[in-house]
Amino acid sequence: MLSRRTNLITAAIYEALLSEPRVASGVPVWLRGRRLWSKRALILKNLERLEHERLQILPVEVISKVALGAATLRQIEIDYAKRFTKMKISLENIVDPNLKGGVKIKTPDTQTDATLDRVLIRLKQHLGL
View 1 (cartoon, helix red, strand yellow):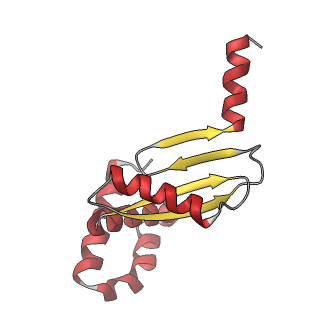
View 2 (tube, one colour):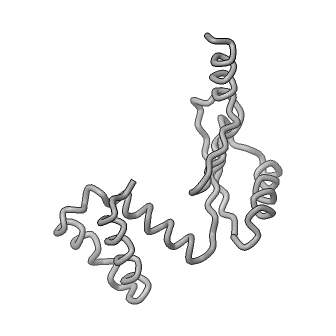
């Protein structure tokens, strides 16, 4: 989570980049000078979020144990396109071999966990184990 100050700095960097793309080369030096270098990954993620909002792109991460087939990914993309009609869907399938099965779907605002791991946790809780 970014602090209010870091959010303001990120917004200022973003506005500067939109108005003058050459500013990009000076951003790392500027961050180091302001002792914000350690927050660069968070700032970059926030810059990416701002750009997605501007371009009306909804990034969707589909996390699964194995790579999903094109037809399955296309169906997920269609489902999200129906829900978010004004957004372009940017779908990414991330393989997590640590999962037992199922999928986890993340957007910037939501997370749907339909993994086998989550089902087993719920089952244990229900059985009081």
